[in-house]
Image 1 (cartoon, helix red, strand yellow):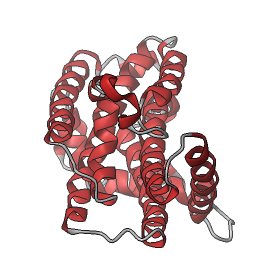
Image 2 (tube, rainbow, N blue to C red):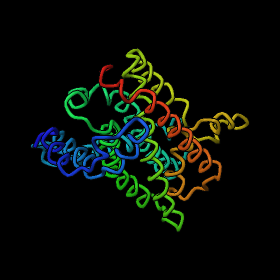
Image 3 (cartoon, rainbow, N blue to C red):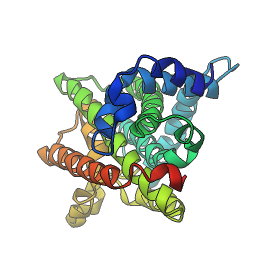
Image 4 (cartoon, rainbow, N blue to C red):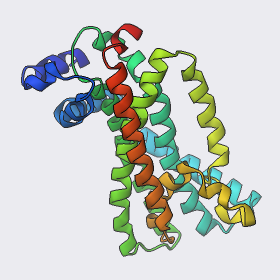
Length: 278
């Protein structure tokens, strides 16, 4: 079934707010329509791996190979003990892939969904939630692989492991405001999209994904000021039984509130102009 068919079948069941929403209510109406963006996101995954034998587990397999190869290589180059470094790298790399993909695809979400935006009136947030959800499903495919690494290298999960649940929930919400903000900016200013792609590549080297904060010694504050580090840490620390600083929660929640406030402001200002920009 095509994406437009899914939308038409769901639109029939929508209440009045679906059609009469405004920039002020777009985010809330869009996020509440879970049955729409869940179906669209799952449809994207099925289309991507159509006729494949192991389907989305290809991504899991590639993650397994990448973490294994990079873990052995960089633990040697950086002089790290592999049974500590490999789980650290594995969780960090998987979460970073989710963040970087959400940023890149979120920046292009309204431009890429132009054919639907021009044909069907519905909350723009639906398109962002669709992108975030399909990448979150991929993340949930990859994390179990890392968990196997943890067990193989003698790590035993503690009670702290349950903190992964709110951490993942925060990551899911972060994807929503990031997609809305970047989607609107890139629809209005097309030059922003390649800038975002380049910045996220540079950010990878400045974020403690493949290297540990302890290597910075007296310059560790540079990592503490990096919000991407805290977004990774709220999932990584509980999984590898590392101490999760309160600052990481405060950074993540604070950034989330600021991000949604900015997304709401831009949506109120630009919601009705986006169809003309794309």
